[in-house]
Length: 222
Image (cartoon, rainbow, N blue to C red; front, side):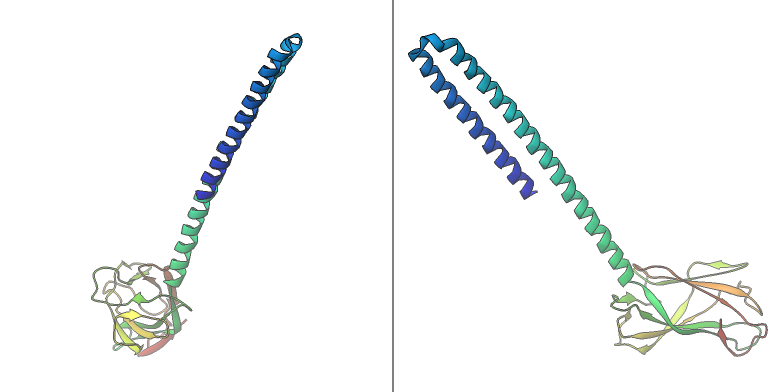
């Protein structure tokens, strides 16, 4: 914006100097008219021509400065919008979780599946992500779906394999999350299900797994 204003100011000063020069020349020509009456018509005609040229030149300068101001303002606005988009993308990328290791399903009394266990960490260079099951705002949500059931907010517990005592999953930390499937789910042999992890800022993670044909106490899911 400051550059555009500088362009406008310089253009205006230039136009003013051109106008003053033209007026000075006209005055000089008028003096010569009085001295040389024989060439009065020619001198007056040339003076008028010089003034008209100055007016046209000033018009061009004003139009050019206005155009430069519009172009620079548009460029600054586009640059700011571009920076906002980049920062939003970086914030989303840095607020994303990633899974470490496999997905484990447990069954105390087969063939009923009691829990689904997975390990989570932040992405490389990522920001801290809240992982507090008791939070009511700015919380990470685990959703569930299978062929017959959809649950948008599952109950879960967190065991901090590596942590500093708070409820934020920070770079270098590792959290073991145990999710309890909904009571109405159809989890059983050969069942496919999807867990959806929704952090407050980062991208949504979909984890789809299939249960084996035979349910055992502990199962590594693929």
